[in-house]
Image (cartoon, rainbow, N blue to C red; front, side):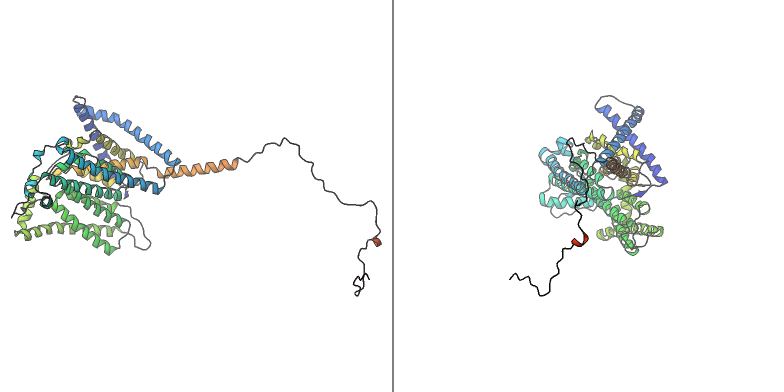
Length: 496
């Protein structure tokens, strides 16, 4: 999607530039401490990063120049790009799945990341299938849904750790598919491929298979909710909905978002994508009326109202199902999040560092957006993702909520890395087209200027033809110039 640049975009740009400096300084300090055995002060790291920024700017400018020359000289057909994209998606899906199977089944997750004795968490104990016992009620909606799914898997595969790992493996493969679809629709082809490649082979993400908690399940639900809201907002900006139908669509969207927020309060961050209702580029349609500011306010209000109604309505369903009071369920939910909620921008530091040194490349390409802000014109395709990053995932190690949920922050930075690479090597479309036009015009002028030149014939040529008139030396009298013989009509030239 494309969004208009506003004054708020400059504030986000400054904050995002600061985050990139902080991330590069953190990675530099971590590298020096763990690989070089030297302790580096944060101030020294930041000074070093400011010296590295000119190097990054040079790399960014070099990639832009090389990309522009290649795109000017060669034209890649659309079907070729589609085939390459299909190959990348198929490769990541197949080998990403095999990578998880190999790590979980054949090598053992304890070799890579974990101690098997730490896997039996409270969720595993609650999901164990016992005769005559059901699942105990839980205040955390996503936790209850996870225990329910795990219990169903255990009823088929047995009360074993491998049952939970098998569930997580399936959830991660499904998440990769939905992740690609979400980024493809909201950011484009290249960011979708970059995000899919990184998450498919990321040790940080794959390590969550061995942690028995709802993070893998919630990440899948989070992506599904993001796909729904991005699709609705994008179609609305393209003027696909008439006014009455748009109200119904946003009403359903609000209900879904309200249920997701009830399952886990982290889903509130999905509401940031509603900013696209106001800032998204609107496409005019001759057959449909133009989208007005009043219509934007109407659909935004509808989705917010029904989101609140669905959220509080979920507690009513809980109260009726458990036979308790409505306010009891509501207060229990509030007390649970007040007591269990926590967060830190470095909560998932160890998880993120499992991807070293590829995580450095991730941060470097994400930093390209800092340089691409000024040249992207009045319309941009990345400001909403920067807003989501600044407000919810200032670092790829950010974790907050009743569980860390660091995978969501890692996902956001993967998308930003893809957008940075896309705006670096695929930008300047107008300049590329202009360069192609100038090249064609210059070639045409050269063809006109160069006329064909012939080699002089060394052989003797025949004499030129001289025009002459036929004449006679003997003059004939006029009366003798008669050649017609008068004959009688009855004369048949009978020689007898």
